[in-house]
Picture 1 (cartoon, rainbow, N blue to C red):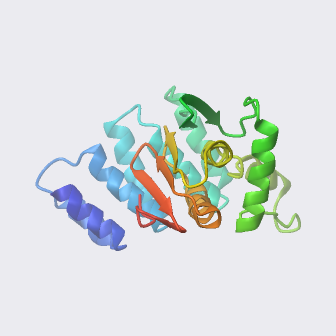
Picture 2: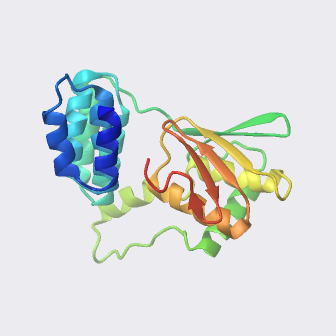
Length: 234
C-alpha cells in the first residue's frame, strides 16, 4: 500500500511530497520504495532527487547497476559528461558491470537476439536500410548538433550514445520485415526501454499500423496507434 501511494505521488509530479512520505514511513524503506522515487525523478527530470534515491538504492543493493545506468542517462540528457565519468568510476571501483542490453524477437519458431548497433544478423543491411527509412518517415532521425555550440568531446559522446540503432529498434524493424501484415510484433528486452526508443516505438506503431509489444525489465509496453499502454510512465 505504501508503494502504491508513492507511485501515485510520483505519477502526479508531487516529488517533494513523495520524499516526505518516504521520510515519514513507519518502516525501513526498501530499494523498491526508493526505486519508485528514482523512476518518478527520471520522468520529471529532477536530478537532485534521482541522485538521492540512487544513493539509497546502492546502499541497500550493492549489485544494483540499474540505478547507476538510469542516473547516467539523466546526466547525458543535460550534457553532464563529467558526472557520467564519475558514475563509471564508482561502478569500476565497486566492480559492477553494466548489463549488456539486448532485445529478443521470436518469429517463425525462431529466436533472434539483437544488441545495440548489432550487425551480426544475416539480414543486417536490409534491417538498417528499412530502419533508416522508417525513422526518416516518423521524424526520429539521428539528431545533428551544431559544432559551434557543442564541444568536440561532447559531440563525440552524444553521437556514440545515439539511440538510433538501439537493440529494441532493430528487433522491431526485423519484426516488421519478417512477419505478416496484421500480426503483432512481440519483443522481449532485458533492460528498461529508454525514453527515445519508447517514443519511436509509439510512432512506428502508428506509421506502420502494427501492434508492437515490448516486455522490458519493468513492465510490458503495448504500442498501438501511436500510444502505449503504460501512459508514458514506467
